[in-house]
Length: 202
Picture 1 (tube, rainbow, N blue to C red):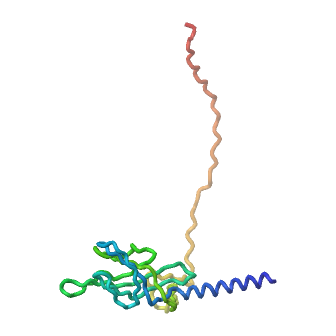
Picture 2: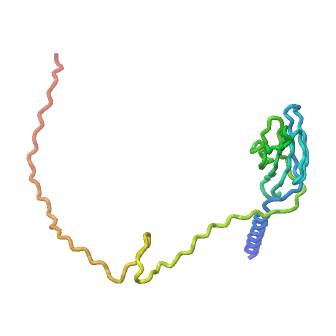
Picture 3: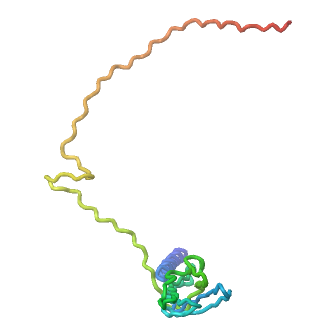
């Protein structure tokens, strides 16, 4: 009896744990941590940027829009969406990058610039948990009643139920009686001609 209660408590705890894990999908962080490389000088600089705050790195102006991490109970996945602008010679800024950076894969969808490299290191300070919407199975349309009015004709693809009358039976097929094969008379066996004898006495 004790084993049954223990098992029930274990199942209940696992259900509660899976429900909470399903709800706590990612954490929204107010600060993103980046590293930047100046390819001309070879200098690497680490810096923190607040969300929606614009900072200058070399000639680039970078603005992180979001920075997400996963809860400690899930597989680490730190991502940030950033926008990077570069001032032109005519005084107008040109968008050189807009997309996601992944801390686990810095080279994946990273900033491609001839002078500067920027990659995401971490997100920090977040306490707000955002539950990602789960995919719900697609609901099939309701099955419509196949019953039709008496005068209504069928549509292509409809399965027509048999009416009250039965189909006529096929006509009987006349077959001839099966004849037994007549026994064959045995013929006397023929003697095989003798094989030639090779003389080896020479």
